[in-house]
Image 1 (cartoon, one colour):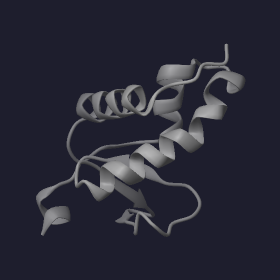
Image 2 (cartoon, one colour; image 1 turned 135 degrees about the vertical axis):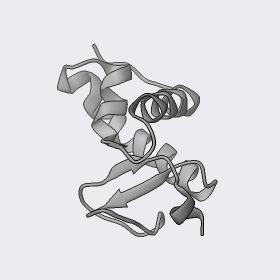
Image 3 (cartoon, rainbow, N blue to C red; image 1 turned 60 degrees about the vertical axis):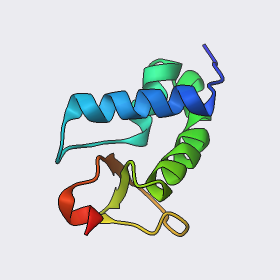
Image 4 (cartoon, one colour; image 1 turned 90 degrees about the vertical axis):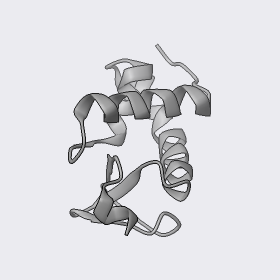
Length: 93
């Protein structure tokens, strides 16, 4: 079940999952991809890069935080495994 998703669909899924998880909790980018593409790797795998692009844009807008090893990252320069979280008062300071 390969599915393409618009950035708007990815953004909506990402923000909904984060709101559901709650403040102070994180989600993985695969959670967002699987919410749209399903549990099969051929469905969610192709969505991983688009999820990352949406996450970077939302972080630049101050709507989410991309976290690696428990710390916010530079959205223009990060590698490896990352998580997504809602911003907290300390992130905005």
